[in-house]
Length: 93
Image 1: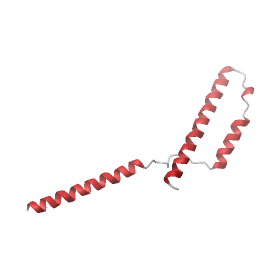
Image 2: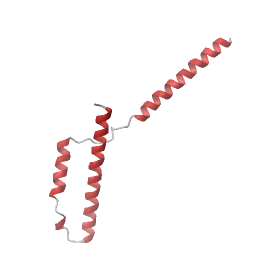
Image 3: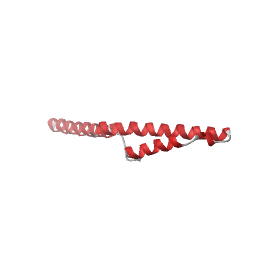
Image 4: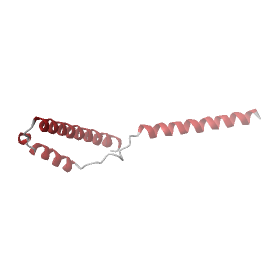
């Protein structure tokens, strides 16, 4: 009876450890499904559009601040997309 209990506990601990390892692997894989991926051509188009924007046409300082915020946000999003793209290429060569 004791040998059966030992084998049951060993099997149970093996199953629990296996589930833990699998859960750890899935947690370490980042989720990219929520990120809208753009092709390199689309990112170049965004860059050229940002360069063509003329902040000199803005008349009021409040609008200039708003334009700076938008440009800063766009640059940050672009850098974030580049970082995500490089991470994806590392995970899935």
